[in-house]
Image (cartoon, rainbow, N blue to C red):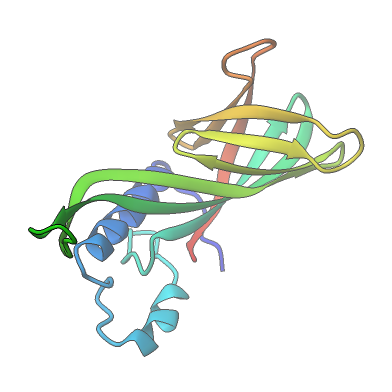
Amino acid sequence: MMMRHTTGHLARLLLLVTAAAALSACGGDGGSANPANANVANNQQADAGGGTAPSNKARFTFDCDLQGIHGVLTLDVEILNNAGVVFGPGPNPDITAVIGTGDVTVFTSGELVSSAASYIFTGENQFADFTKVTGTIERFLVEWVEQSDGLTLVINPFGPGTTRQDCLLTGSAFL
């Protein structure tokens, strides 16, 4: 079940996903000490008050205005922590520690579907590469710009022909 949008919900859910990823990087597993419980935890939904982050993955659904054409954007987000590796002494050192750097990388994937065209995409941090999968194949870069109630898609952010499409958050869930 997807949750209904509330103002600032996207930011809160992204923060929860980031916190879960940080906990995992520190050796925690989001509170599930038993690996058998991991699948149960990963299928739980966050509540409108924030809930707990059972995984570092989430799915967001948006209604988009694509120059007057309605589109549905499904955005899967996975947040991974960056880490530094500490090696022991000697000519063939063992890894003695893994230290979180505090930085995260946001991986995105999903699809954008309208009556005019369908696109798939993958990306990293605020950018994604879109590929049209219907009709003539097209590829272009999109920059995600978070708004209080959704996203703005900045198409071809470095030109030529930069355009902006607004999308309203309609649902979200942990994966």
